[in-house]
Length: 126
Image (tube, rainbow, N blue to C red; front, side):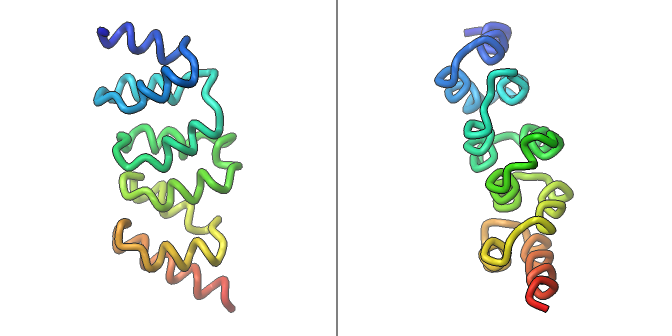
């Protein structure tokens, strides 16, 4: 398939098509999937958990207010090492104690995220 055909399918296709297309190496195709009007919160959560996804797609998820109302998506973005640091740090303020503890100990995220989680954990425990 050409890129233009994939873009069309991302906008018009079903869940299965979007699931396959989000794994495409092209950033354009991944962005088309995330901008599809038919995409569900469950699909967005799966994308936010995906560590092979492009950082621009994760940034696009973080910008969308409707998706940020879902706590699980916030946790997924905070735990994904590909999420841009500025966007990931914003999520730390919304996490609960259990997730903060796990994030502070996580080796998969940047050291800055570990430190931010530790600081927020101290604030929550007071």
